[in-house]
Amino acid sequence: MNVLIVFAHPEPRSLSAALRDVAVAELTAAGHAVQVSDLYAMRFKAEVDRDDFPQLAPEGRLKVPGASKAGFAARGLTADVVAEQDKLLWADVLILQFPLWWFTMPAILKGWVDRVFAYGFAYGVGEHSEARWGDRYGEGVFAGRRAMVITTTGGWQEHYSPRGVNGPIDDLLFPINHGILFYPGYDVLPAYVVHRADRLDAAGFDAAAAGLRERMRTIATTPPIRFRRQNGGDYLIPTCELRPEIGMAGAHGFALHVSDVASDDGLTRPAA
Ligand SMILES: Cc1cc2nc3c(=O)[nH]c(=O)nc-3n(C[C@H](O)[C@H](O)[C@H](O)COP(=O)(O)O)c2cc1C
Image (cartoon, rainbow, N blue to C red; front, side, top):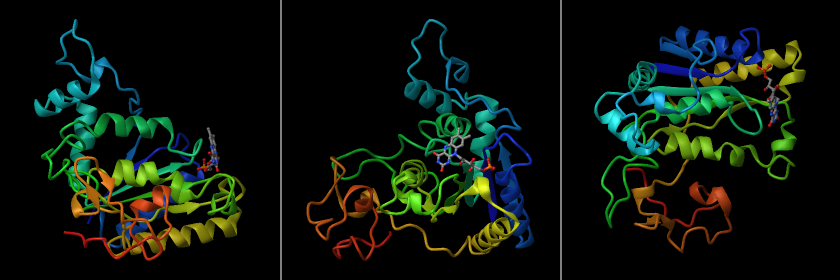
């Protein structure tokens, strides 16, 4: 398979970079082709602004979705963005790797998403009608491909447990896993998270690296998170609300959008 790692850390000697190298080595040894977009090393431009849309008339108001749509349709987006889109189309698997900063991804990676996931490419696609609400949440340009997050946290695993003060890690990563990756169609694998990363000793690193190698070895077979597909029957269209019968088993919040034994009511439709 072709694997793209989008990597966001400013320091080549960081733990994150060491884990990235472990992942690349394991994937390569298994025969996968790997590309890395090292965003800091590339000095990837993080801000969306006028310069992203060379075709926009100088006097025109910048409305980003419209400019993104027109630019993408005309193959007029900037070369750095087009290069990343081409890598995404090459990749069977996308890995986003970053240290958890303020409970989410570093700004440079968010900017990569903002700029690369263009209108007409990653969003705003498909039929919008009384029967369907676009190709999203399980459908879209990346349907049939896999994606996952690799991240490191300063905090303890317990701090991110279901009753931990930071909030459950699955909730914190939901906007990334569901909102960024599942939205344009990826099957999203559970994140690989290394906790207490600032205090990792040699034994801790060895354990973290071993776990990561195992996840890389199983990247083609690890079952994805069972996010409910928007157009799979669980949601009312066009409001995109879950059918009232769903979630009565006690799930609430983000967990409602995952079909599993605990939250399921037997209504979840199998993937098309
Ligand atoms: C700006 C910034 C914000 C951070 N925010 C968090 C956070 O929200 N939660 C957390 O557990 N650790 C946080 N940390 C700690 C980092 O996650 C930790 O330093 C990193 O994962 C260690 O990996 P590295 O050595 O590759 O940088 C933060 C660190 C920085 C610099």
